[in-house]
Image (tube, rainbow, N blue to C red):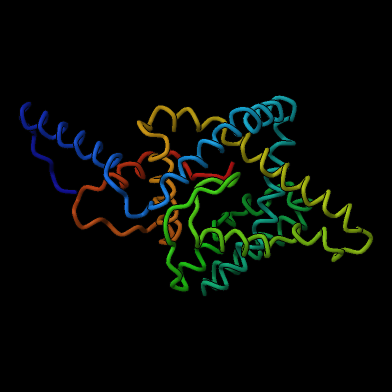
Length: 267
């Protein structure tokens, strides 16, 4: 950026007034990305109540009971399983070099990291990447479609629903309940599958307990905040962090992106 000229008090006040007007328009004008706003707000209220009365108390109890090294081990385990899908999506997006790194990361952590409980790959500078099937569909040219809030999962889109299905198909835990693994019948497999999903969700919610206060203080309209954060996060991931600059020089969504609120995660 070039040098900024010092503004006079009147000009500064006018600028703040304009910003306030633009922010107000952002929350009251019809958003073409969100034609299902009535449905979406209702589902977000359901998710918020579910989180308030169930997920958050359970996550707080989990965090209080679980030693930090066990908590980190559980997070590492699910992150390692996720690297299988990350590697497949790398290859589907023709990111061959990154795919080799992520495949190596999975092998190193599985073998040397005791099944992924220890992030040995991180110690030898094999970084964690975030690739999912939603991004792959985007690279293939599939449009995201309108904003869609899903029960239990939170912010998404029609393409995001396809992404969730694709990611589940790439996760080996999904197949435990289908008799794929010898010695595990369907009933036991379904219990393991459900337990793993619940543990992953609780662990993820516990890891994000510290971020909700930032979101609450930053958002005038909680719904708009999560919607804009979702679109900014997906754009950031699609461009691998190299998001093109907006042509008009001021973008309310970009102002939100510059605040480090972290990714929007499912409930």
